[in-house]
Image 1 (cartoon, rainbow, N blue to C red):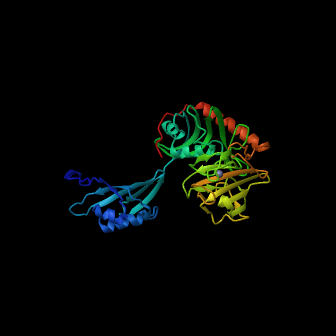
Image 2 (tube, rainbow, N blue to C red; image 1 turned 45 degrees about the vertical axis):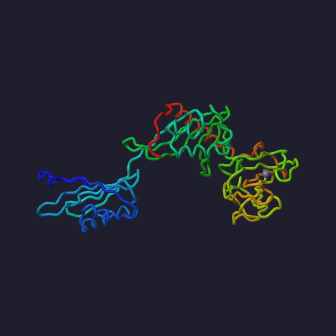
Image 3 (cartoon, protein in one colour; image 1 turned 180 degrees about the horizontal axis):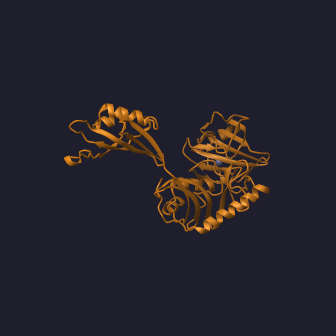
Length: 385
Ligand SMILES: [Zn+2]
């Protein structure tokens, strides 16, 4: 703690910084800092009119302006300030009348557009971080392309990315928050894919290619995260039965308990024990497409025959039930009741913009293209993660 020893400065307040530790209350921190209980209580009572003191987190710092003790008067606090988050400041100050008033100042933020691009040497993650793409924005970028790109298997050295996103900055120029990606581009195995943000007439925000085709697919190609393909589609020697047999799905090796997602919206056609398939779920997505999931350790309790499921809803967990040599998901895509290669099949697409929506999209896309061309790619490293 600072302390003023020069008697000439007795009436000038000095600054004290205090920090909340786990288990502390504001009262305990203030009294430990030498503030009288009555003063501490008055500060806390005033603060509570704009900020719940129980909302102070460990490591939160508070600055106090303290007028030192004088022969006739005890030390007093003239001001207490802190930044509970990047968007506001809280100040409790002593009035001439001798009581405290608390104020919350919202910081004025402005929107900026940032353009970023890079070439992939090892992974998209490394390349994007090197280019200064903030983590939340990188997460959104991966989400946009998750229907289209298998990041673990399809990305090759020399592929690249480019994007433009919104950033919120304070008047001082500090980045405190991120908005949406407006345009996202990825070159995958030499092929360029580009998508633009658009909010449709129903208020749903999504990403569309230049022709107005949604990036969203009616079915996911990979219904588990972080899994590797342990057996592809086609003829193979069966690991248990020993003879050559058609493998009518794809096996994804993953630890027992890894969540399995519904590949698309649909109705559960079968959920339960199914011979060599072990615990098995089959979902009917429409008149043409079904998906099936086998060897589950456990089927989610909501997934029963006839139940509706949404895309990416967890339907169960990876296991090794039925005829299986180790924990994996056996995944099948059925087209007109025949198993097809999930990696090779042309998956049904999402929405295609038409008429007035398409015209509105075209105008927005042109505006985004103009903004994109007008700014230089950023080389600055992300500030606020
Ligand atoms: Zn299999």
